[in-house]
Length: 336
Image (cartoon, rainbow, N blue to C red; front, side, top):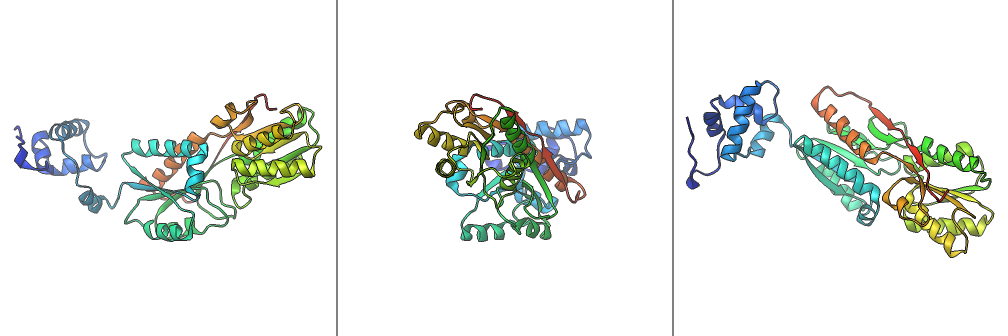
């Protein structure tokens, strides 16, 4: 039986969809809520009726039935300036967003650095507001992942914890990638190799320094924070205090770009006087002068894997500890 709609009929109802599809109200509800307990024929009929009527599920009612909000929070613990300025964040956020959209989930992006921002997000991250949380750029021994798990909020973080804290994470092989980069410089005949580290309150910064130390036990070390400005300042310090260095491994492409600028300002040449290797293999690496040799980390794959692990926690029994470490590779360009 056809169901007529008019301007005065208002928002289409579940009953109207069921009538048009020739199925029961419960079948429509199961299709809308993504249940697998529906025959392909019934599912197709319901989807056709939904499209014809322009039916939009009542999100609040659906939440009451499924105990789901269909929202995932992506929390980034950096300043807005850094978030919008560094290519890493844009690439991983895009991958995460695409993965969530495929599952019909919405992403709630939260940037938190100041104490009042942190306090507000801790109050928001409950099962009443989000189904799960993805965490990016954690610093130090942050207790937030453990707090969220205690509340029953599924959580996956990018990067392993700096302490042996259990939980789900996705990471690149930061130590192995750094080790490969510095070993390459050694094979190229470089003998006085320095490094510019990332933040040493982050697992990635620590691991990349460890990879450097695996090859060069006592080379010069200058600390940065992944930003271009910190790379420039660190390079100036290295040239002032260790003018004989002939190669630098920078723990990010942004820092490498800043370091290369200082090398040129000092009248030196890359790679003739100082070879340079970065980390990330970002778009920056292809546009420096000369193009930057860099450790490629699979950023988009990291984002997709974070979504996969989180959805696995939401869809089935909690897998407990779950750790994914993705491989890296060295991309050689003219800077080394």
